[in-house]
Amino acid sequence: MTTVLKLGGSVVTVKDEPETVDDERLAAAADAVVTAEDDLVVIHGGGSFGHHHAAEHGVSTTDGTHDAGAVQAIHGAMARLNARIVAELTERGVPAVPIHPFSAGARTGDGTLKFPPEQVRTALDEGFVPVLHGDLVVHAGEGATVLSGDELVVELASALGADRIGVCSTVPGVLDGDGEVIGRIDDIQDVADALGASDATDVSGGMAGKVRTLLALSAPAQVFGPDALAEFLGGGTPGTTVGDGG
Image (cartoon, rainbow, N blue to C red; front, side):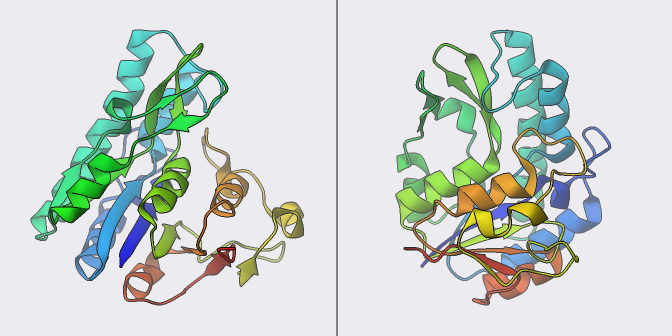
């Protein structure tokens, strides 16, 4: 069994304070990861690290930059956050290893992502827990653009044939207009009115963007809050089920 887990940037960082880790939440998430029994791929978002610098330099998933300094600032911030998360997992005995998408992927001129999965697959086969992150990737004609953690979830879950996909956010699931958790989403149009933008700087589309990307998966995905992380890793289906895997 292979599980792909996305830790939202707002879970592991204080999203409105530049380059600030949420120590308590990160520690709790790392504690939960220790309990995972399946082969596990961890992907984390940018939070106050990547999003802050990407917004400052005007870089998104479609608007790129040819400024090497901007690339260094954005990627460097994400590498620092990744190192912190890997360190937290390592302290708990998790065989975590960093994989930086900037060194592995690229976009073609029409924006199609090319991200060979062999490095991640081999790391899993060798007993490691690969830890990837939202990043920049070189983009033909655009210089470098943002590769969101949500895109990585879809890319790797499909390429690896993941059995379980989880997205841990700061809310207990996808919420409707009354703040109640939506149990299941099979079509973005059914919940379009209820999905708004993120409440802090986010260059990857907020919750609506997450749901759209998850609906592209070949297996259902769970969207849930930090308190349900251990339940998900234990085989549960907390929060909102997105897609039917059909």
